[in-house]
Amino acid sequence: MVGISFEKFRGPIHDALREYSRRTNGDVVIDLDAASDLVTSPDGAGYAAGSLADLTYNDEPAGKLVTVVLAPGQGTGRQTAEYNLGNLRPGDYPHIPAVVPRSKEGVLAEVALTVVSFESHVPFEPVPHAGNVRLLTLVGGDVYRIADIGQVLHRYHKVMAGKSQAEPTAVQTVGSLDPKEVFSQSRRTGYGHPNALYNPHPTRGQVFSLVRFTEPTQTNRDIITALRAYPAKTRPPMRH
Image (cartoon, rainbow, N blue to C red; front, side, top):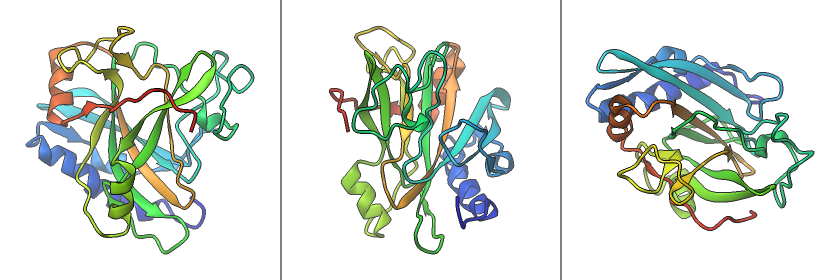
């Protein structure tokens, strides 16, 4: 982020993610030091910075947690040979790699955690667990929004204005609308293949964390339940 050192994010990310472990009574543990150790994103990524941290469940290794910093107009999308601006139609979204949904091949479930939001044009004052990004996917060759991830928009504005507080919010960005079949990828209930998170707010940066699950194990079901991660409130595809 221009004008904001990565060191300023360290404490806010550490403290916000610690709350997710607390709400699981310590069953889910995140390597908070690694999660808050941001590095500049690699070339081609649509976001400003990120980190990678270990996740454990009941003291056993349980995967990785990816944390991303999304400046205004940035996203988790990336161009590939399969999905790129040459063969997709972003519609009303900027024609940039950040909005190109990523393949989720092999991913049975993915959970996004709100971490912090901040106004990018004033002194850095991060708001814990505030977040509102768009979940983009593809319908044919068109990029569409199918859900908002985080707080609903009017609540997000209230949180950022200091009129309300945000709670830790976990949402399934790849998953099933049927809560009994969390790993189902049927055409009827599955969603989020492929996807990208996009920050549409022109003056606000946001930090989100992502956990992906590739095996339909009971442990992974338990982690999703412990994090209180609910299915995204999907809607008919929208172009904006």
